[in-house]
Amino acid sequence: MVYGVEEWQIPNREINKILSTEMDVLRKSSRKSRMERTNNEGIKEIMAVKGKPDITDIIEKKRLQWYSHVKRMPAERIPKLIMEWIPLERSKRRRPRKTWMEEVQAAMTTSNLEPDQWRNREERRLVSGRRRQLL
Image (cartoon, rainbow, N blue to C red; front, side, top):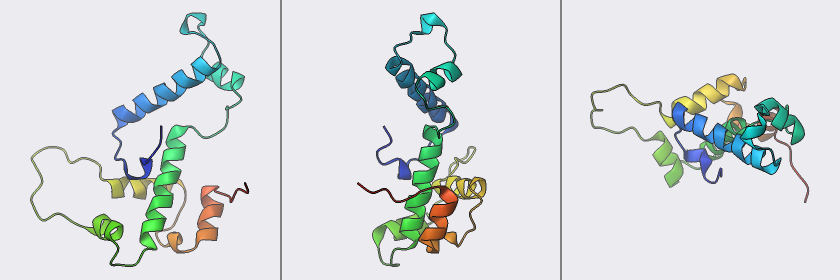
């Protein structure tokens, strides 16, 4: 469900749909129907996922990992060129959409990351909670 989520630009209404889909999957996995009127917190307790990060936290973490990966790339690589590209044409008349970079900046502020912390992988892993896993 989160394949390629690093590059997605997700509006709030889509985030709500993703969260409801996640809850629907948990509800079906726990074999509880909506007719039983079990609330979401009860379903999370049954599935033993209460207190664990939800799918939006996972998306945010993956987005930050991709950002730091691209920032470490050489300047001539295409993903880095695309990330730093600014279009020349004028934008349309309407409320501007939130850009991918704005979402990354917001994720960095919520994770208490400094702008240049992407250079040091170990420090970023400690802040973002990512640890190496042995297979």
